[in-house]
Image 1: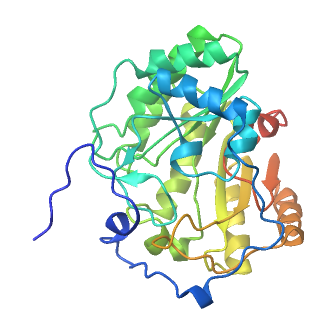
Image 2 (image 1 turned 60 degrees about the vertical axis):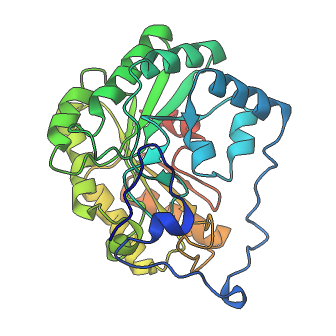
Length: 317
C-alpha cells in the first residue's frame, strides 16, 4: 500500500526517486567519477548573497538557484541577479537529475505576481528569468499564473527584459497555455529539452521529447517575434551522435538560442555522472551548434539554462 503524500511535504533524495520507472541506485564510492579541475563554483556565502536571500525571504519568494542547488549561485547572487521560481518550491514530477523537491504543492499564492514585481523593482534589475516547478495538478499547468507574473513585473519595471523558462504543460494543454502566455509575452521563451530522447525515460519521467520540441515550435505561432531557447545537460550517458542529432532537431523546430552545460549529481540518489566533458569538447559543440544557425550558444562546463541569460539575450536581433 502506497503511503499518501501530505500536501506541502517536500520529498527529496530516495523518497523522491523511489517511484520513477528507471530506478536510481547509489554508486559505490570507488565508481564515482572525480570532479575534474575545471569544475569550480564560487563560495556562495558573501554579503551580497546573504542580503539578496534576506530580500527574497521577506517577500516570500523562491529562486531556482537555491532550490536546484545551482553551482553558480554565488556568482549570480553577488551580481544581484537571480532566476525566480514561482508557483511554490514543490514539483509534481520526480526527475532524478534535479534537486527540487517533489510532492503535493500548496495552492497558488494569488499575491505572488505582485510580490515578485515589487521585489524585482526594489532590486533595480534590468533582466530577469521567471521559471516554475511543474504544476500538473493545475488544469492549465500554471500558464495563467506565469502570465500574471510577467504582466505585474512589466507594470512595475517598464524597461525590464523578461525571460520565462516554462514547463511543458503536459502537451495536452500547451496550445491553450501559449494563448494565455501571449497575453503578456516575454522577451525570450525558454523550455529545456534537458537530454537526448533515448534517456528521457530515466531522466525525465512524465515528459516527452517530441512534445517539448512541439511546444517551442508552437511559440512561433502565438508569439512570432519572440526568440525561443532550450538547453541540454551533458554527462548522463549520451553519445556524441545523439547530441549532434538533438541539436539538429532543435534547429528543425526553429529554436534560436542554446545552452550546453555539464550535469553535476546533486546527491547519491540522483543520476550518476557518466562523463565529464572537457572545456575543449564544449567549444567543439559550440562551433557545431553555431554552424547550424543558432543565434547564440552558451557552451561550457558550468553553463546552466539561466546562467548569463542577460548576455545571451543581448545577442538576439
